[in-house]
Image (cartoon, one colour):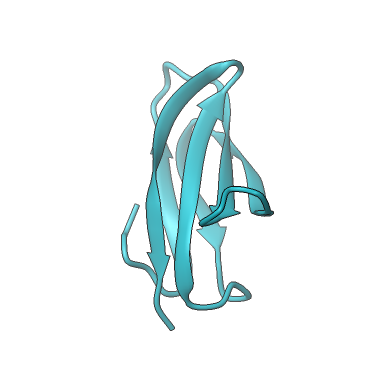
Length: 75
């Protein structure tokens, strides 16, 4: 996942996970700004409509958290 990013992020989901969800939230984690289902392999989420700023992202499968970190979008 390129970080910082401008227009998109790429997520590589290993074959050990059949599907997962990428969720991007505002810094207060109160507003979900993007939710995308991920499949095995390479996935791209397009962020052109999102303004410059700091966000948090989560990658989850079922009840398991795979990754959580900050995401900086710079236009």
